[in-house]
Amino acid sequence: MVISNRPLRFIIATFVACLPLMSFANPEVDSVKVNTEMAHEVTEGSHEGAHAEPTDVKSKIKAFIGHHVLDSHDFTFFSDEVEGKHYGFSLPVILWDNGLQVFSSSRFEHGEAVAESNGNFYQINHHDGKVYKLDSADGKITENEETGYPTNIRPIDFSITKTVLSIMIASLLMFLLFTGLAKSYAKNKGIASGPGRIFEPIVLYIRDEIAIPNIGEKHYKKYMSYLLTIFFFVLFLNIFGLMPFGINVTGNLTITFALAIMTFLITNLTANKNYWGHIFWMPGVPKVMRIVLAPIELLGIFIKPFSLMIRLYANIFAGHIVLMSIIGLMFIFKSWLGSSLSFGLSFVLSILEILVAFLQAYIFTMLSALYFGSAVEEHHHEEAH
Image (cartoon, rainbow, N blue to C red):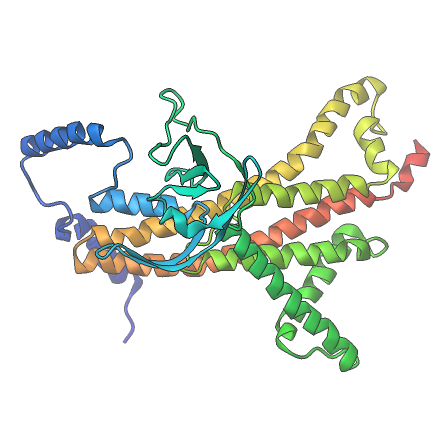
């Protein structure tokens, strides 16, 4: 049976329009009574502290999303709010504070307890997931009234967090896959075998469609190892971010900053004289304009890695927020229609996020290759000037 597009669109539009009427998430109540109860709760909450645990569904979803995008000192698969149990495993906490402090993150009891190590006391801040030092076992993290930032001392943290563990797993996976692929070439006379052969077409694509066209056949080989590493590293971490374990690595600004810095260093440390000549003394333009353009071109050196950092971070971070917000709507809409639409939309968005995972890895690799190509480009026309 074939359904015409117009009736189908009308049916979908009608369902969406009637969605607020069919949902029972927000029942009608006395607004005066609600305002009175809220004021009473706020008054009581001010005595208990500004960081009380959320009680309503919307606040819980918002808090869960906030914790999801943050790094963590433990790896939690899921939690049972009724029994107050968390199922996962703890990670080592490594701090430098009056010497090396090493202990398990289980001492924090998921941020609810104060951890003691060699007479020093530490606690995790719920807002940023960082470890701060306390004066005593009964101490608390205090915040500046104007800025809202904690005023406690923050020790130097070398801990193996969830992000660090994910990076280690991705690196180990890449090492095993591609060393096996390389060995299969030598063993089978250039014929790939094993699990790594799945990625052979991607390796060839990066070489033939990204590296050679943008860098040139003369110089592309010295950049291939980095381009392949950065592509699969970003891709694997993006895919990890779509798993239901709360892994948000490439949506972390410090990670994307480190990746952009590596591209920045390789570009400028391997650049030839023509690259620097076009920045500080651009050929083919009047000398007065060269003086004006030099600071602009120099600023462009730092803008390029900054754009790499922000592009990857913003796309992955926004994808996590939007996807989890739509999933959270299933718990807010207490109707079969609202929850079904939220589930369907989140499913479609999850498929789209897989495309974004590949796309962002491709864009980061492509732009890095472009920057490398501009750094080693040879300008033979300069002699004519």
